[in-house]
Amino acid sequence: MRMTASIRTPEAAGLGMTSQRARDRLVAKLREEGIADPRILDVMRTLPRHLFVDEALAPRAYENTALPIGHGQTISQPWVVARMTAALLEHGVPSRVLEIGTGSGYQAAVLAQLVPEVFTVERIEELLRQARRRFRKLKLENIRSRHDDGHLGWPAEGPFDAIILTAAGESVPQDLLAQLAPGGVLLAPLGPSGHQRLVRVRVDAEGGVQHEALANVSFVPLLGGIG
Ligand code: SAH
Image 1 (cartoon, rainbow, N blue to C red):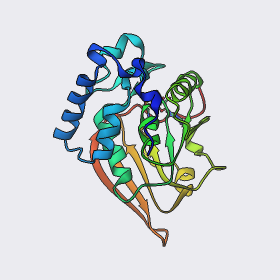
Image 2: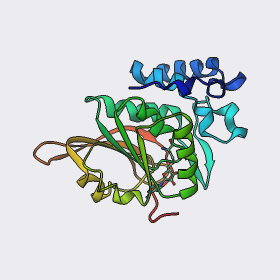
Image 3: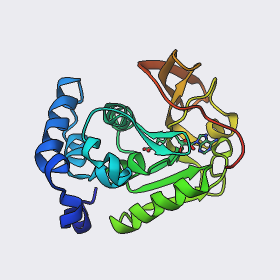
Image 4: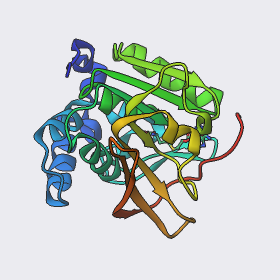
């Protein structure tokens, strides 16, 4: 939607292992692994993922792997971010998207360049603080974030056209389903560690709920309460 000028500063441009060549290699790998949507590939080619991890891990930022971000949490693997984003856009661009599990803020930052409004909820205050700093630095002004237990969603801002969970539960929290607009789509990793599936849930105009398994994935668990 918007490619802000701040994504093109020298710091964001990167050097060596964080250079444009490293990003191009990542995008080539994503394409080989089935990500075809040029809008998503363009955003992932431009967005500086190295600014979403600790400096010590920056040289690994354009590998197709999850990386630790502290507090026992991870920034998702780029392929998973791309796949989830593709599954959200497949049925048209949603106007308002709610993400549960801000983490580093990378998934929210990818979405913010593809949809008009992103809302994101994180239970660990320190991670949220760091993510907000990144959003400000990159001038991603269409992201709103909240420190709360994501099981509750963000009732004051609902309903949402799409909801994306980036932490795995056993089932979809009822409050989240209730905040999904008619015709909306929800994406969630579901199942126990080691056996998770990325599931797309759609609610039709009559209120019927359909589940569709898209891929095997590995996410950190969706926890209760705030940290
Ligand atoms: N989307 C993130 C992935 C972060 S990992 C990124 O792009 O970096 C999942 C995140 O979900 C963690 O930060 C974890 O603290 C958070 N989380 C887990 N349970 C939660 C809950 N109930 N509410 C809000 N956030 C939660």
